[in-house]
Image 1: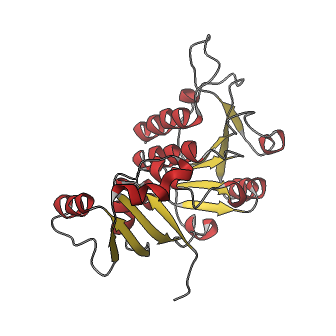
Image 2 (image 1 turned 135 degrees about the vertical axis):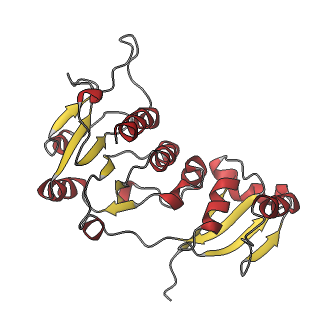
Length: 245
């Protein structure tokens, strides 16, 4: 078994879901006495700590793992290895009615984490991100995703435009979300294979990437409000499409 690089995550949901995921290798776990009791109390039928190296720490000792990102560990810190990255070409074989979300230059770990949480909650089939822009070892991302990194296919690709071009050739429609579109996304019949493309928090979709969209759509909001946060926008869209399906 090849050793993958390891990193630390913190927070109750992030750590417990990593322990539950049989595909995830958890190397060490650092708990307070209280958090250990909670793990056993909330998972009475499974010994999630079996074969795991467990170290007991005080709350203050755990604080040092989270200081740089300013997040609350809730008494749970773990050292984990990366999951195998799923291969997009393999995944789409013989599957229909897939909905992917694709991020173009979105880099904020909190936003990406929240978006992963919504995507997993509303049955989105996967997230496509540029590997260089994806903060794959961010404690903040794992904390914001609240354990949902373990429940979503995350496809890390080297080039977003090449990936969109490839998927369009495989019968996917690409919908770019942009505030200046004339068409509300609720007017679309969400059938078949679709990609929901969201641009960066600051300047929206990259002009070059926009060439690879089939349609541009928007979320109708109050005319006096400039825009919604990307993770809020995505949650609204995912919920609506999930209802349609």
